[in-house]
Amino acid sequence: MAELATIARPYAEALFKSAKADLDGTAGWLDALAAVAGNAQLQQFAGNPKVTSEQVFDVIGGVAKTTLSDHAKNFLRTVIENNRLSALPEIAAQFRALKNSQSGSSDATVYSAFPIDANALSGLSQVLEKRFGRKLNLTVQQEPALIGGIRVVVGDEVLDTSVKARLEQMKTALAA
Image (cartoon, rainbow, N blue to C red; front, side):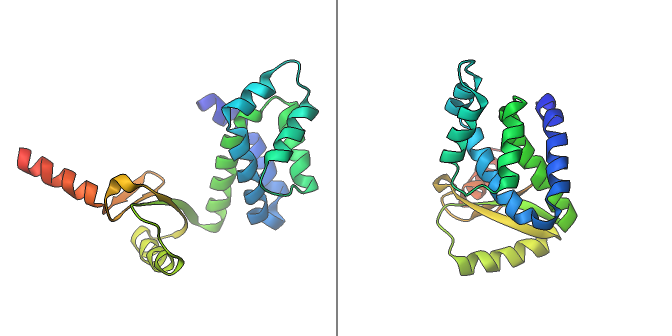
């Protein structure tokens, strides 16, 4: 996987430098393209020697859930023509890391057993930012297996207050 990171780094850095004026907008379309490019069927289609790079571009542009600017189209064409489509998800991850380091924030994923409404998420965000000591960009994923509570992942840090985790702790304590 280190090879993919090495391939992606120059693309992410170049895109970051060229998009200084609109980092949020660039992150939006880049994440959309990365989601499409991560599809195994698309990778197989793009790897077919009979398929032209323009055909791959048209398929991705048609499937992407966002309108692509000229800057985005040029970037996508460059990635496709250099046969780096498989690196696009890693390019997006490295771009996000560069963006976060500039703004002093981190990406955080909140796993919850139930949906979280906007007001509760806002309050949770404030509490988590105090707990982790930095601004957090929260994304929420529903995970019913948690039974209740939440699990928060920020980089390599995990805060698990779920019912499932508490039951596991009790099981370990009783077994000892």
